[in-house]
Image (tube, rainbow, N blue to C red; front, top):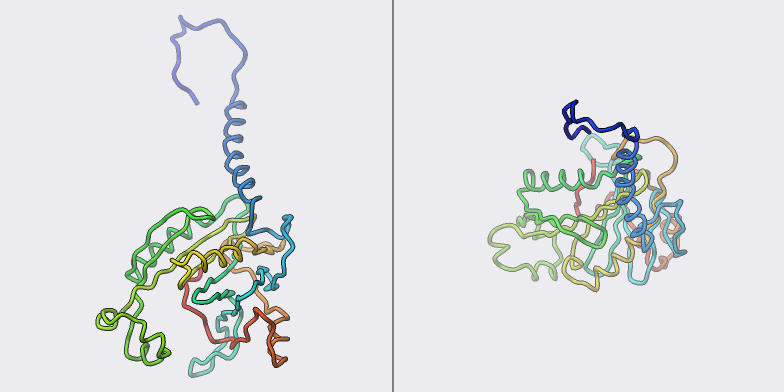
Length: 278
């Protein structure tokens, strides 16, 4: 970069030749510094890449993500219909998300392809906030969390007569009268993202863990223990990494007593409605 020129008459004796190499080296060092810091921070805990050296834990293998199993956890696989009948009823589907449930809390996990040299969480976070504000008439706030930048959202949840009628009585009684009268209740959602080598992991938390530190700590430990299996196949950024059903799910359905920590499931019974990255 040129900072200005001396007049020719004042030009000093010619010294060592100046090139752009030192500047380029400085730029490279500046680029590497955050990456090294991020790598050092990541070394303290996951989520992990399948090529990392990570702690050996009992995990359920969902294909692109391997999720730790712990006391009190239940798991559900969310499906997206790929074929429907004339009335719109699902005939076939593919797994699109893993739902981890603990007491009154839930965390949805999805892994996506990402560019080799840059993450996508910053862009995804901005787009998610915009969609919530413009399409759902909600509110969002960015903040820092244990995994870096995150997004907290308040989305109005309709409380129509049909919705209330389908709720279990014990849940319906807990809804404040003012929410019932106004026809909606605030739903708080916490979005977390982790950029990895050619992958992006999104975690979306709902329920008591938003405010209950004990329940959140359980879900945080699960997230830190996740292993992402990116694979070598070229994929466009933001394409969902393929999920599969763990063998424990099938075994749990065949046996009378299901394996602890694994919940039997209906493929088309969705968990909480959570925004998916597209």
